Image 1 (cartoon, helix red, strand yellow):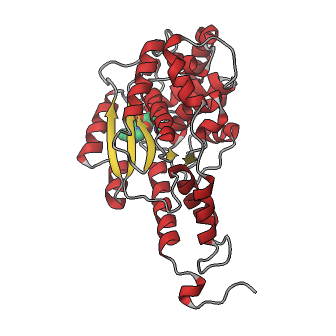
Image 2 (tube, protein in one colour):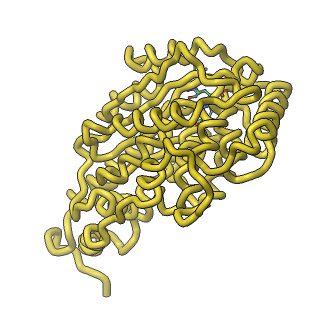
Image 3 (cartoon, protein in one colour):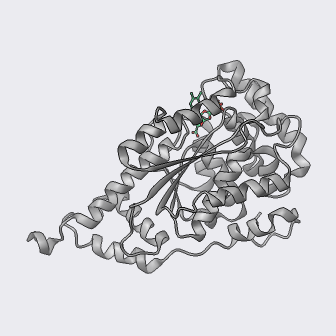
Length: 344
Ligand SMILES: Cc1cc2ncn([C@H]3O[C@H](COP(=O)(O)O)[C@@H](O)[C@H]3O)c2cc1C
Ligand SMILES: O=C(O)c1cccnc1
């Protein structure tokens, strides 16, 4: 489906669809200004590789020739999932709320990264006491709830950060992410599921089967990417999508985390691929479906550290790299300033 598709769209999604399909363009002149300054810095042309691209990306999407990272935010959205009844996670659903407390108490991996590197961690809890429907027997959400949750996610960036990293917490969510990706891109459960928190072979088989049952049950309702999200996704995925979309309209570049955050972003991509042009993919998660999802969208992640945690950790580490890239760009000496001879 694309922006010009004529398939009927459930009414609650009309405005959201417009926001996704018709996001503002980036600022090419701001990007060009970064490239011009890069050429003056004391290094061989292009030698900082993707660090140079990151700064150019920030300039383009912030719309500023000298981008800033004064107020970077990590937004972690937490939700619970009825599909945990199918034995698809190695951990109990109670862990979602317990980890939310751990995030704010400062004990989680994402908490430590954010404290060490001065990233503002904000955690958004989505009705943890009310898990979404078990996708193997009913839709995760109705369309109204899905639209309202996307709208909630849009509010998450109200503090106007200059960068937002998108992360999640939700026991069972690698199963719904796999189902959503299968619903958007095709394929079977086995193509998209991985071990998540560390399920054994039997658990992996249960995940693939749960996804296949959900796909068969909801097939007729997967008429557009937003309806697909409602049926196969979850609240934190809908909220992540909302934050990603809103960021585009407020000139805030985005770094997407791993497999689950990528599944949320994929909904926008399925509406129109350019809807994610303001997003970097922080890393390639070890969750097996992540590489497939990135490939399906033509995205090259920044890092590949064998991580499979979620929480926004891969995105946050990429933000640390972005901070270094920007610091180099703004503080390095030029050839003139340093008295270094330029290229022959
Ligand atoms: C202690 C703990 C901390 C986590 N932090 C992120 N996740 C990650 O694991 C969950 C998804 O995996 P699955 O689909 O297998 O349940 C999500 O909550 C995700 O963010 C965690 C999981 C656990 C157990
Ligand atoms: O990459 C992810 O998002 C991920 C991987 C495993 C468990 N939870 C999340």
